[in-house]
Image (tube, rainbow, N blue to C red; front, side, top):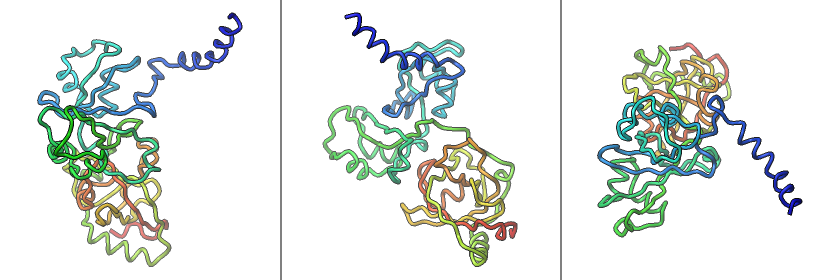
Length: 295
């Protein structure tokens, strides 16, 4: 018996050490690979995540992770600011629907994304869920869940999309983004002129735009590698839409997950028909700095 207990301790000891490494300065991740997000809707909280509080989680950390207004989070849960959270307590965390990816764009990009489910409320329909809450077609939800929208069971739990496992992040805003920008048509002309000077590089990845910053004007982007002043051709393969943008800055290191290749303006995102804050794009640009500074 003693030998068996000793063997168990030897096996468990590395895991115990790992568990002891966490503290408030180095907290465990809020979402693990196997976790899923649970969404619901209510008049008081709107669209919200149902989140069970774990150790080393605070209101500030959760509001930042889900990009939820802290005052609203406190209000809908009846919590006083500064009061520690109770481990095991379930919170309703309001969330913007644009942060839920509802359109599938390739398995390789979803390795760092967790599945999101929505629990249907009384008298709710797929049209309400798709059109009012998430901006996704009810037919897509039917196919994704293999259900009939006219015959849903009570409190049906439906897979509606995906959410980044590392959480959300503060959108980067530069001074150039606050100024009036040039039109896509002018950039398209410069792009085609520049493409004659060398070989275009092609990329596939995620584009991001700050849906809340609707004061932006013009067609511009931040990019990880394209030279500042160069021009990008962006294609949304879901709709076949295309737009041209000017690179006004480099994407800051560690500000976004690696799969995010570019941050684009609201005008460019709308031209592409983007529905989610993150969406799949194909990109072409000339690596040489020869195509910089024409506009």
